[in-house]
Image (cartoon, rainbow, N blue to C red; front, side):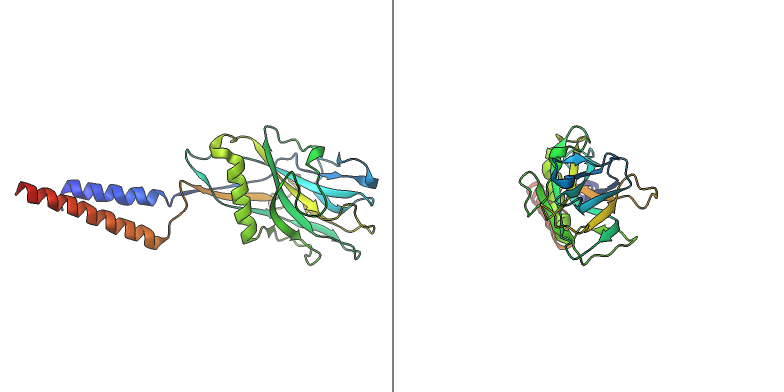
Length: 250
């Protein structure tokens, strides 16, 4: 095989390997994360953006509290999309008096600022008409308080990845913020002081904060067998072209 053919083969292999490259990132929500509540059945209000925890559940019944985490949409390399994403968070507190409901996770549309709005509030049965359902029952009465982070499920990861790509809009929304809403499935809430609380970005320990991990890439990562097959087909094609040229000049 001559030098030109070797160079062409190397270029083919490199181009195929590019589809397997991925960029990994981790980010915390901004410190604008907070709870929104309807204490005593009033209109939604921001609870406390400086608190280290956010309550989800009953809050001065029939009031409800939900939590919202803003995340920055990063600028990915040109042409890349999110290939996987996962949310991790710590369940800091929990009180079940026999009336505790479930928590559903939603994604809310990208905005220029990370400010949580009272209109982000939603509690009640799925789905939220203004949000994208990421994972139903991400918290249930079967959970328990732990210093170990909880994560979205495999299906939740897939939904979160799809949501991020939709919001990213091929880079048009890079630098804006998306919002993840922990929504209580009761509204109005049952009385009894039943709730969950999660740690926020204001939590003191560096490992206590919620975080989003993601990877990005140029294309969906192909199976190794398909890559190997493509390489072999490409090399065979190059040999065929080279042989044809030699026969013509013989």
